[in-house]
Amino acid sequence: MGQEIKTKGEIMLEKAEKIGELWAFQNESLEEKKQLVLFDNVQFIYELALAQLELKSLGVKFEVTNGLREFKLLEEIEDIEPLRRKLAYFKLIKGKYTDYFHIVRKNRTRSVNQYLTHWIYPYKGKFHPQMIRALLNIIGLKEGDTVLDPFIGSGTTALEAQLLGINCIGIDISPLCVLQSKVKTESAEVLPEILEWKNILLRKIGLSLFGLKVLDKTIEDISNEKVRNFFLMAKLIAISDNVRRRKDFIKSFVKNLDLMILSVKDYVDVAKELNLKLGKVDIRSGDSRNLPLEDASIDGIITSPPYSIALDYVSNDAHALRTLGYDLKELREEFIGVRGKGQGRIDLYNEDMKKSLEEMYRVLKPEKYAVIVIGNATYQGKEIKTVEFIIDYAEKIGFKLVKNIDKIIFGLYNVMQKENILIFRKGEKNE
Image 1: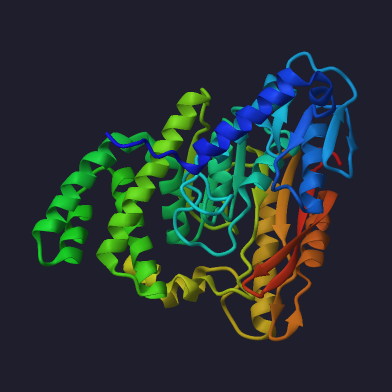
Image 2: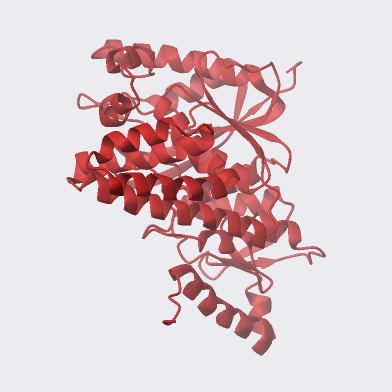
């Protein structure tokens, strides 16, 4: 047997544990000074703002020291377990590693934000998962509560809610978004069956001269939808690699299939290691303008409406949507923000967003919170004041803006420079 190869995450943990031993046992005064230790990659002002907000939401009294890099507790906390289990922006609490520290080390990619199944499929404009975990804490959602994301996109809200034991309803009009969100959150349930079908599928491809046709027929023959979706997603990633990077389809399929399986296994392993009680996830094909939900049935909302005015999601994912059998012209008539031209497109987008905001208000429980991450896009050389529009209309229908956090971003396909994290509260019925 050769020497066992360790993953980057395992090496990271070993180094961190050595450092942790120094903090915890060799220098008690140093440990006391560093009662709350931020992740090293926390560097933007909005991240520090969210880190402070999540501490406040969990009832922690603290002060920030050492140029905003260190946090000191002002009151002793008898039980740190709830904090250790929930926090997003801190890796250490009084010498003990947070659950999130252990979760993020399960990463098969080069990107710090693409741990577990987050990386699956190259979707533009993804949420930062660490931010979503923090926001779930900030708006006070607890295990067993239900969060809604009416623009579920790549499924980040669903996956982060699931890890915290929070139930999630994710809705999207895009069949591609529905598929990838399901795959990221459901595949861990059927890992043994996925492994069985992998062997069957690879054997059939290897024995055939018609790889793609055999692959399609084999995937169609899988009766379990969750397993079938997994292999269909692997196929779509390979198609993306072939179209965008000119990679060989079969080689890409096999490589990404292996990586997807390892990522799902990581999810299963970390859930077991940390004894996570995973939240229930319900991903649905639907329309944010007409939500299939009862009035006042949702405990919180976290979402990011599409930037379709500046980024055409139909054209961007055309190869995948065609592979799934959809007519692009028909989809274009259903998607928000891609209908019409010039000022007409902006007007249609605004009307669609009004309906979406009204629906969010309707389904949210009184005194609960809705978080909308949105920015002012540029269209035909002009800045579209989407943020101001969202704030004005949301307050007009009864929401109260309680926080507006600037989120500076870099290089988002040269479309935007800044987003805003808008936290709204729905008032009581008599307000």
